[in-house]
Length: 395
Ligand code: HEM
Image (cartoon, rainbow, N blue to C red; front, side, top):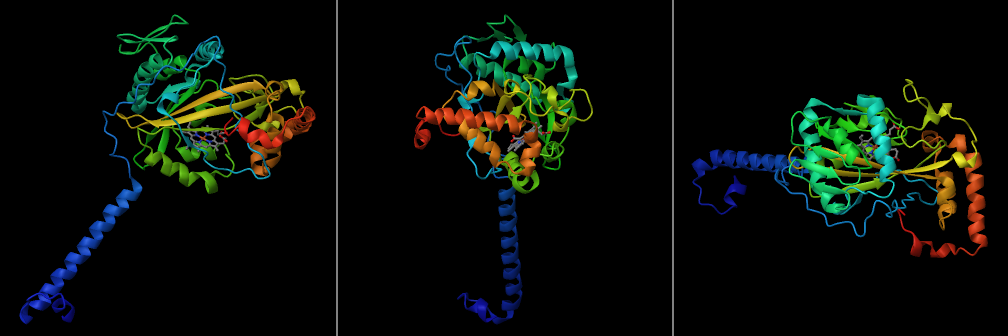
């Protein structure tokens, strides 16, 4: 017991052996409890850190916003090659930028109303366990929208009025007149999804109003965990590049944080709600293989989603918003640097990304057109080295 004595304690020799056992046990207990606390900390660093009564900050009004004159934000979220990097691509955003509205609102509003009428629960669903979260989302929108877009919305004692459309939504009555996700979807240009943590710690799609998604259907994905949503759609490089990061992101996301990401697609028809080129919306299998090859350039459309993610404080569900920006390719090529950069981005897709995005069906026509438009820009004196001064991702 030399080591015990070396602690310079006054221990009688008869007691030193039992005392050594006690000390060893105490040290083991200390190490184990310390380790297990540390382990918990790594897995769930933030779960308890935001109180249920956390208040989402009230946004200021969007400067000079008008349903007639505010143009869609020009997201051109593609990068030069030669290598296409698959990443989560999340960036932190300000809480006031949660929902973006512009002068395309009337079209989106009308398209959504038509979709709700025609397709009903094929595109809107709230699972019973997600009902409180859907109500919480509605409450948040009824607070946020009138503060952010006061010329479009008015807060009322029972909910929210749309001043432009004349619609009045009572969100306190029970039962509600329609699914809370449908009411929420009528207010904004975005599609909306609610993800909830299951007993296994994974996040499941439990409610959605997916009305203008173009390439996927709520009825195929409702109830699925995050990874199955993506693997069932063959999202390229999901397992090796996205799976772990996404799972940990969902666990750690705090109510006071908000994130966004953008993507982009090309489609070869002009339908915002459902890109029929990949097959009828009601057919069991839809795929790029059915699309017509080499359609004229006027049929090529650029589609970019701006998605946001935030956690609701009361139900702790995660709200995923998907706002689609949709333009003819022939419009966006008028912007400096866009045709050259888009052509470079498309050429940088590897085989898996190309198959997912249907490149084979349009690359012949599209790349030739983009190259020619890029050349026109160079011929009129576009200075390539100045691009960073004009545009920066995601613009
Ligand atoms: C951290 C959050 C997320 C990341 C990083 C992510 C990433 C991706 C990526 C890379 C794709 C391929 C297309 C693209 O480039 O966007 C994709 C597709 C998709 N994602 Fe996500 N995603 C996220 C969250 C979600 C959530 C919450 C949903 C729930 C509805 C979702 C539903 C989908 C669907 C339905 C597709 C299309 C799949 C298909 O083609 O069938 N994603 N996602």
